[in-house]
Structures are given as C-alpha cells and as structure tokens.
Length: 71
Image 1 (cartoon, rainbow, N blue to C red):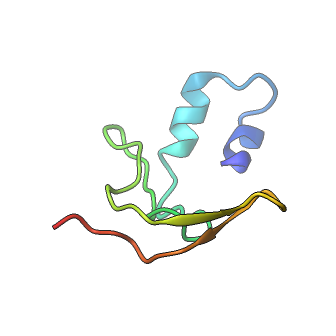
Image 2: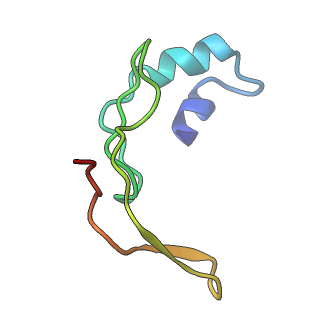
C-alpha cells in the first residue's frame, strides 16, 4: 500500500492511487485478513473474520483463531 502512494508522488491524485491499487493482487497483511485483490467493483477483503488477542503492554495484536467462516 505504501508503495502505491510512493509511486504516485507527493500529493498523489486519486486517479493515480486507484489505478495503482487496481494492480494489487492477493495482498495479505500478516495473515490478519483474507488476501485482497482490488478491482473496479471490489475494494475489500472477503467476509471471513478472525479473532485477535490484544497485548496492550506492547501495543500489538496476536492471531487467536483461524478464519471464522459463517455457516
């Protein structure tokens, strides 16, 4: 995501950011969400959820479950 903003330069125009993001395929942020692919009509990851455990002492989250699938 940061690379998208850097590629579009200082004060990036929205059109540049959208165009670069739409090249993103299977983006995965440390396994805390399903892989994300941007398309003109899709700009969010899948509907599955996971349970995270917060460690407030160090300000981090730890994964506490596999993906929770609605049945």
